[in-house]
Length: 397
Image 1: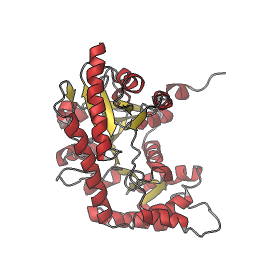
Image 2: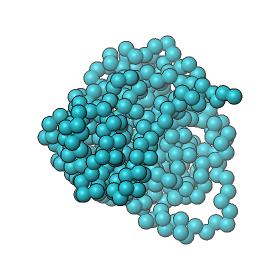
Image 3: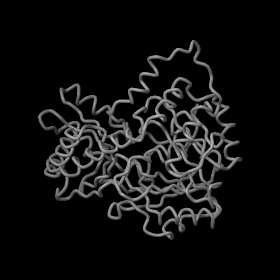
Image 4: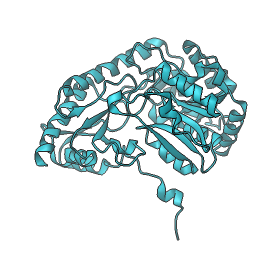
């Protein structure tokens, strides 16, 4: 018997595929610095953990399919500081941000349709699209441009008669790019001109290291019925395991469709919604401290790696990731080399080969993604291991 072509064609995660090599390194007595995955080591807010400890309901019941009104109302209030007017009926709570993306694509695309995505992009976008029978058309951005779009035509030339949406991640995983006002305006203009939806993944909205104001497609009233924003508590509140995401749309047809999808899986997690409600009640001081901590980690990594001959990277403007180009290496082989054959004082590092974040064949072969999820001292050590490991790897070639 044969499994489906959908199952055969869905790619494995480039973030997790090298774990057997890391496990072997640890069995051999090495310490592995895991900077391959966006799992922060920052503590989940104590207010949220306290809520869990003091939870006193006797039954964990199903919630409404689109989530508790009390949480959706808290989320709508959160957007006030961004001058975005949202009401609870325009929000659907999902089981993680990935389900928000899945529901969004399912709501606006049929099998055989395509979406435009800037590459490199979050690898699970491709897996989700493959599960739905949707094609991804890549808009290739370059490390030399900080992974920014360079013109409106760069996006427009990829649109065809089966294109239904433009998907952006802002700030970007995996590049750390924060799109400029001009770039968002190009996307908004094309959505109007070409009758497209805009899906804006804004999971890392707070994590910005530039003075430029954050701009969402939802700031443009003329396309608000074309915009779906996807989001999550995972990184914002260091609550990845809670699996609470949400999406926003002012298009009643979209919300109606997503509500039907939500009903099919019954409800998002109940207990974790109460946790999320507590987290959305935190003050802005919480975000200031967290963003400053990630800025310190980013700077420690960059300062240690800067000036290394053959190593190229932009200074990330947001999120907590960086794409680093190691000239003359094959990144997956390099990542395995670090885990199998190289260490400093029995400490090595695990990175994510970047080719898994590209859709176009042959791109990202000499790049890796690093996540700033460890303390500044550990990020500095990770950069040192990468630099010295790169020199050792090149000597073997």
